[in-house]
Image 1 (cartoon, rainbow, N blue to C red):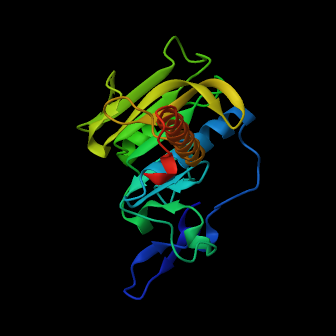
Image 2 (cartoon, one colour):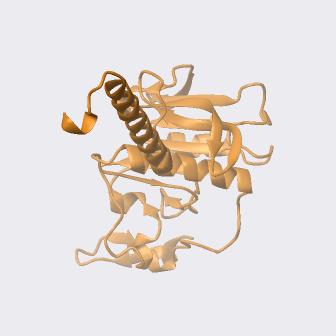
Length: 236
């Protein structure tokens, strides 16, 4: 990249030419486990934060500086922005910081080997972008004993914190063991301040079905008790 990415706008200011950016290259970059984990994080946000405006995506390029290549987080969340209407246009296919006017508030990297540079090069890039929270999830401890590392911006640098409640964005993260898409495992999940996980759409539907079944069982039990007392429940 470089000067070939610049075009002149109507005010003769240099701006990036989105048509020359690499917004996708069709190269498979993730494994099955990481792909499921990414879907869980993204889908549960959209099913739980329905009254908030935000953009959450997995494996979408983020252009932070037009003279440098995009970085592709496993998951990012950016509040107070939304998917552009014409998302098939070249300039709307990835996250251009200069177009959205801000960096994402949170980025998650899922470690699958020792070659991802999550604790050095990527950390430095997100620090430079001033992403408020950077989370490194290392389920198989490729980078050390810690499974979960949480960094927050303080001044110009990241500091590591043990607080899993991310105050500035009103979200928490937690490790949860259970089933997602037919797979029982330990997953990284969003949670509220009390530690309750944010549910996916399927989990919400299952809960609603369980409540309906319980209500029906209670109604049947009440009807049987009324009949035992000689009262026709249909007459009430």
